[in-house]
Image (cartoon, rainbow, N blue to C red; front, top):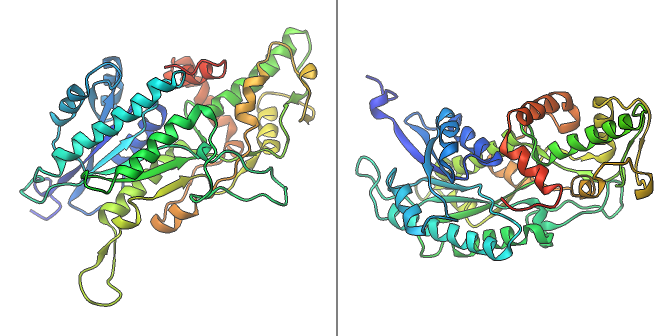
Length: 400
């Protein structure tokens, strides 16, 4: 029997909070397919979900479902539900997102999430790992978002600079509570609470059910349909936003792989002792207490995305930008599209690339729009919850 036989395998436990959501689903799958691990290790992924109706879909992805809700169950009950599956946790990833229509409820959610992590960590650091080894200090990857920084200048502006992890924070109100929860976790982690924290800020993500890129597809389809209702063939796709608006995104699979890259670096990577005074030094300290942006290898402009949308939806003529409200198509909710097309932001992800070697591989949205549209429409036809959530938000309903 060689040293990679099943009898010698050691699972590393990963808890994804919000494992049935758009990002949580991708992160769960990314840990399961993770490569470049020590031969004796693999990730065993558990998913904390609120609804029992989602458990089957989670289990089908080989993620072990744990049904409990911070919003409706007591904190003690949720903690015990998780600990019933494992008392040690190597990695905990927060991909949850509460209702954003009630700031008080949001603040309470992030407070409860932090206390859940604290409770799990307290048990984990006092429980010897499998095989009688040392106790496990969980690595917490806490999701926030690049909208925490606000907007940048437009493409071509001489003063344009990317947002980096050290940029000032200037979030829109709708994500302010989420940002505050992440910063609170960063402040608390690494003290005497028994867990380490890194905050992850991803740019908008695309692919599959689309997230806000799905709203972009819906907008173009609505513009085409509006022209047809008036007895005309759609000719020009119109936007109220500037053509040089920066749309910097990343495919959700690439984004999820970045989470795994951070975990792999913290858990396994080491550097040789340059002074030659001892064993190699763990790189965990380069991850914990840090913020990491995740974004695509380059940004796209609304000009690029608009041209791709126009071609995909059959607009044969030019695209128009900076269109006034009176000249917009009837029956099209162009105001809400400003959140998608009018939020200009260039985000640097050089920090995570240099530290972990992570690279995004999937095509950008404008480069593969037909495939992304087919996937989005399939998800929509299947009643995907993410599609429904984004559609509600586009009409001002930010509840869950």
